[in-house]
Length: 255
Length: 367
Image 1: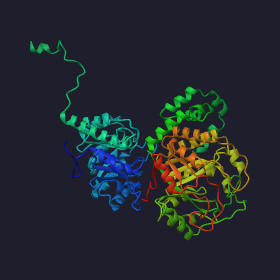
Image 2 (image 1 turned 45 degrees about the horizontal axis):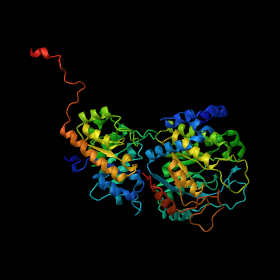
Image 3 (image 1 turned 30 degrees about the horizontal axis):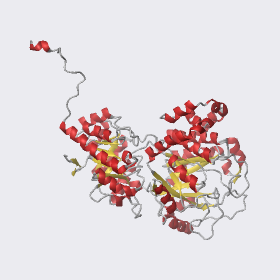
Image 4 (image 1 turned 120 degrees about the vertical axis):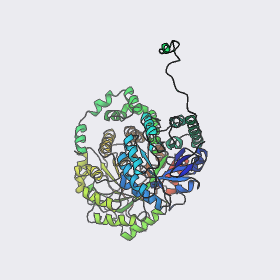
């Protein structure tokens, strides 16, 4: 399959996965393996470098890119501080910006996200901002120096699929950066749908972490993301609402 | 605006007539609905809902897993001082109780911190009685300075503060506050808070809002179940949490469900809250407020606590002592109340893992 290019890296997998919500950490390496994912996100707030047993980083294979996220940040200032802490803690220079000041729906604050993106991109971070799909906000993220744009498909953790499909489609058409659908994807078929539409990748956590068998579900997502990408590249035939008319309305032009 | 206005609006509704009219179909509709209103919530607290606890439990479990995953945050309380000027008829620290009083020195706080942090816990909740003399804000601030070295998250469960004081403790490193109204019903509140600053119902009721306004990261409310009819009490807890959540969406609102426990003193005006009632309260709250944190303390017995986990719990205390100096000191004070679940942090971790839940020891950091 063709590789995904983000922040100067070429990635073999178009599935990014999260590490929260799992019943235990020890399952994470097997989930990563069966997902074939190469970019793993984790909340910096949960990383405890002082604890051997509790340190999530020990469960992530060394050949994966760490994508610490700023979960818990309520504004740009807090997101920037968390990102700098992540770098200082040795988590590399990739950062997923998550600025949420609404604990009821967990919707991201696009304005504060753009502010944080600008500061961090200037500092040399590879910034992947999580956002509500909005064209103007996405454009401001491009200007701010984002390496990709991550619109939500549905509110985080809801597993409702691509509720924001039309808005994401506009981003795919208009934004000249990889669009990665993050949040809301609940089933492999929905991941495939996003990929068929032209999303460059998807990020999945809840749907894998809370599945009855997370390892198998990770594999299912991996396959569906590949299938969706192949379908996109193979260019699906046009959908027709009506069959070929037997008495065409423009037939007279050939008379 | 204050939650007090909402309390006044709802306190005189005719609960028993409402409950008598709740039909099974109303409850089923509330269970399936997204975005319950206040009366759906009240219906879930009705006697008629008792027959549908299993259906409520299935829904509560799925909402909790979806929003919080299979993960439970662990923390432990550290009692700094049990000196108290309040006379509250249900509390072991009651100023007129003849108990051994103790206040930790800063050196002792450091010892306690070392002992607790060696268990792996990174979230600490500090508690004091109410005494501006024994545990003034300056003492709390000194304690925070020490605790910051050992813990990634510091919560306080102390007397209610002014908004300015909340700002001060936030700047010092506190990220959340726990404050229970004890009982929402004002008449009973007045009767059982015999004397002391705690007698001021409004100052306590508005404390969570002052903390939100000061930009506290997390605010945990609750009431001491057993001081009033639990259906009404639970209703007001839910309304209060919803009021705060809607007005301050940037604050993580959580709820604790402490039941009255045996303690020094002889308080006997207890409204019984049995296990089934506690379960109904938790389920109704989870359905009404899918994203609110729910804490269950060591007041509850081991096996009951374990069974509550899949129903909506997001936070648990572990390795608990309610004595001042209880974690490390040789001379401990008398306790605030008797705990039921005496398991160590290790034991709680093992239990969670065996039930398919990840124990989370760190979920924040000083930024």
